[in-house]
Length: 392
Image 1 (tube, rainbow, N blue to C red):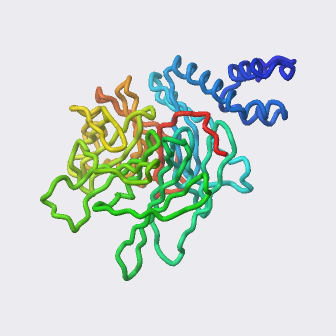
Image 2: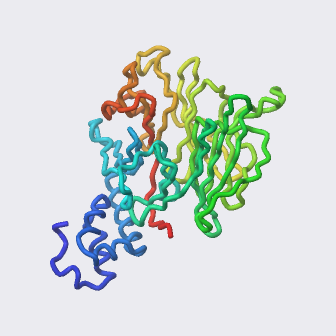
């Protein structure tokens, strides 16, 4: 910030925005806003946010960098990625830790979802949810009801109405009672009305809640499989299901480029907020494949005739049948033909967080993020595309 002119406060607003957007790194915005009231007001304007993000994109493109969101040990980080570096330790650099400005205590996050530059954070030991744009605006705190008398499993997704751009949250609740079958329930939260309501969903499939889901172009996508009552000889058992936040309905079954069993490893990711990518690892052989869509719409999608990447993890790691990416998350670099998979490290106790950089050429590198405070909490990563979106 030493490059700022001394008479900066006397500049016309448009010129001040232009100067500030060029000389202030994205990770320094918090310090800028605390400097003075004028800078705080200016840096929160939508026009400044657009200029600032445009400058950041140009700089990142020149350096061949992109941004991802990481969650480890209940903390969320914005991380800059450049897979063109030869040294592994330079490939991923944490730019900052997500901090909620109006939170009175330290906030711990156990799940995070990305949509349109916004992050939906599911908190640990806290009944509220929070939606936040790390680059601008205040967090939106949302009350979420829980039933302490029953064991509940949740899956969430963040999306928006394509006509009005108003955001919504989908929550899938799976109840398990001691003497009853699982009773699924779908609820949706509307930011405009600030309220939850139950959705009437007729379905012939079950969402694989343990695999998670992703948002793309305002809609959500989940792994799903036929209900047990269906005839197993009729058609595919596994597929994707989309949720259209505009119509508030689930779409038809969408094909996967492979057949999978519940014991196989599955993970969804997005590519530049334009395509879906799926990681598939067979339980019996540990062969890992990553596929990328060639076309994606709410009610239709198609896959390329060939996978993006396919590797035999037994050969790469020398771990035989011991090394599995169960519970992993990932992102890809299309230009470099590289996948980066986040999981527990190769130590048998699962006490370290790590990222595995896997190349089409058979290269394999591990980035150690240090000891994990929670053995059962998997590190998480998702692609992140900054935006100037602000929540009212």
